[in-house]
Image: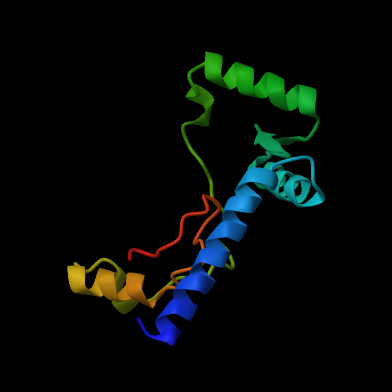
Length: 130
């Protein structure tokens, strides 16, 4: 093995160790963990509902509305008016390109172009297939 190959493998090993360390220790009561948890909570929260033209923002009323809606089988929520004003749309040509069939070679090319030692999401998995 050449020196360069060994150096690359050692660098990958160190990065993987640091990820393992974070997975072991990172979910303890740390500022980093709380920042991640708070961001997740904010992303998944519902701050307001509009029901029959009225905005509900208080938590007890929100909870009650969810209970009422689920008991009624969401009968009152059959329609949804979306305000699409200001949302940019893609061209028909781009829509067709996005809906086209793709080849396995194209998928592998995309995967191989990603950094092998960086996780693509919060699960911590990396793309190093070697």
